[in-house]
Length: 39
Image (cartoon, rainbow, N blue to C red; front, top):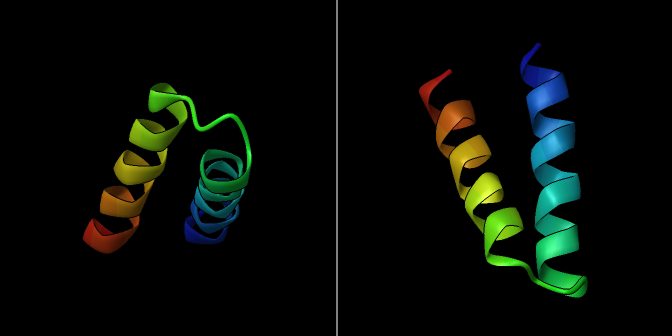
């Protein structure tokens, strides 16, 4: 499960940095990162 969160967070982070950079995507990336750190 942590691996899945890692993959999703990386994809969202890449989309947020190199993509349109929607605030929602950035927030999702931050939330995923916090979830990973807590796990």
